[in-house]
Length: 277
Image 1 (cartoon, rainbow, N blue to C red):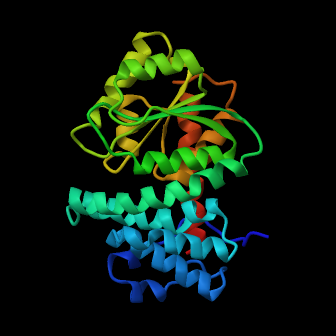
Image 2: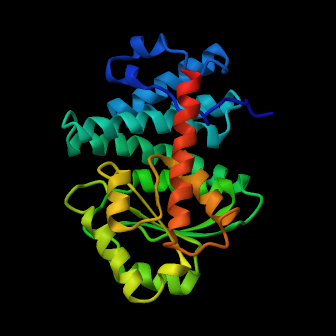
């Protein structure tokens, strides 16, 4: 039976700015057995340090202890890559360091993806995702895609450097409920807005709810370009996607009520975090 370890709460990961000894002092993953908690912290730092040669060893160690693939992705892998994103955003890391961490994630996701897809038991709708034109980064997008698949969505991943016209073609072909644009670079984030403009021009805006995410993306940016939701991380993106196909399924893409509901999800998470802290 898989270990039940809580990855749904928002963790304070400031300890990841220091070293693994500081990380070991935290109460993160306290509901896991001691040896699993240590593996989680080691995996977090494996990703931060970009030590890809050892990644699969840590992943297999966790699986052997009964940790589910979804828990690994939503837990230590998500926190590790979140710290990499913070360092990149703050100019503490540059592309070479990010690419080494990305290699760790590619190794881990290659091992876990078949297992996560096998966990899927229902199909609640189709999601199209892609990294916008000019941007070749896809780790965050891949994590979101796998978490969506584990949650029951059928995911069509268009890959990287996707032209706006390819998003249009995918919307027409697959008729998704949600379209997600990823961007890691400030120089490419504007393509999210350009792609959304083309969706409007082609008369498809009401058919899809538009999600945006990536290291330089914020709620303010999502508001500026008229996206329905900002996915700060994979867990939040999945939670908002589920709301869109469940209680908000009758609302069209671009409806102000969808945007308001997405902001309410964020407000409730912040309130829960404050109450827990």
